[in-house]
Image (cartoon, rainbow, N blue to C red):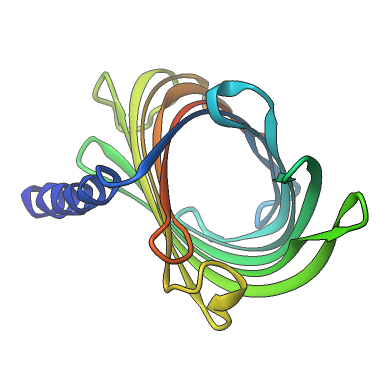
Length: 241
């Protein structure tokens, strides 16, 4: 347990060192994350997210992701799916929306560490990214292709000790690291893409539903020396049907 906490603190310290040097924005994210069982071994994943521009002025991003889960056992799930993302782009006096399509594969491993419920997620994405191109008085899309790997760890700590957490308040701490591989010039030209650190509190309504709200710190590595940190207010619902 002590080694686990030490590694977590080292990881978070390196993240804080990076974000303290970046340009800041304040945004809001809203999400619904759903798993729908169709049989003992098969379920459907889908999540829908809305993300705002700086200072919550407008919708910046719409994301819809779906996939097919195969449950190897109660602790291991493999998934393959597709995601569609629509991002608002502004070039001079023009604005428009550029699409991104992703094919993705992932592995989720869950376990318990004393009173903490831990999830590890390993995801690979094949990204087909819309590129902003001025065409007359419109922004059109040119295709770009890139690969990305993501590692996500989420820890849930119920406020009351329990062997099976079915209802009650909880705290959540998670972090996700994104790295590019293959054609990095299609994105920021670098191996490291971004990091998302998240702390939240929530309420488990039942074994099938959670509600939570929290603070997410997103560090985005741009081209050249550009980088941004987003202070994000995030609200989310989790359904397991």
